[in-house]
Image 1: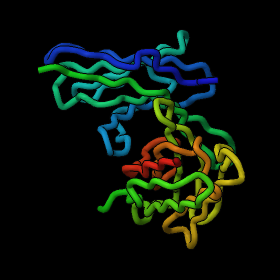
Image 2: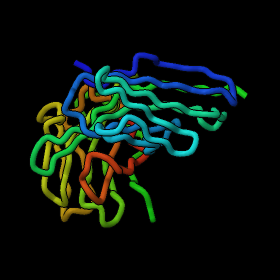
Image 3: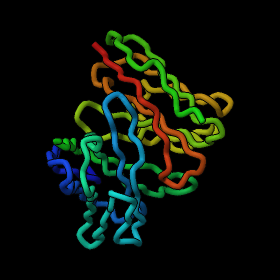
Length: 115
Length: 114
């Protein structure tokens, strides 16, 4: 059973417009949520995170919103640029005792920003 | 600083053969993780080392997979014997602190079992 779901496999937007990527989760024990960006033949790179006690975190063009009651988060990219074209993974961190944390990822959303 | 290095970048082997993947974490990072992405699916946790000790190996699929981290430096992940369903991209990540985030991922090893 998938605990982190990204229901849109792909998204296409025009340069300059807003990109909104969505993510749903089921595990109430997740304490941090993260977005990773991945280019082909590269590893995921950290983009932005949000603590489960916050509802918004902003970093430049990137803003993550968290709605705990709905178990939903979203990543907003404004304005979108062609270089933002990549696969975006939503991930959630869970503390599992001792010094154990691990990330649970969604399947990813391929964002294409058209010039 | 050098990033997380993985090699080989690609490996094609026949079913039943053995393959060893290697990961060199960022120097000084005690935490090392292995993750795997099977085609089109999510990236899944395999295991977590703190220095040379396995902290959590709950994601290892079965006993055909063996991970080691000798001396707390580089790590190897051996698959023996490989099966078709082992195909995917194997990512290694490292971090200085274990807070569930702040990982640096390597570029991955794409394993194809034919």
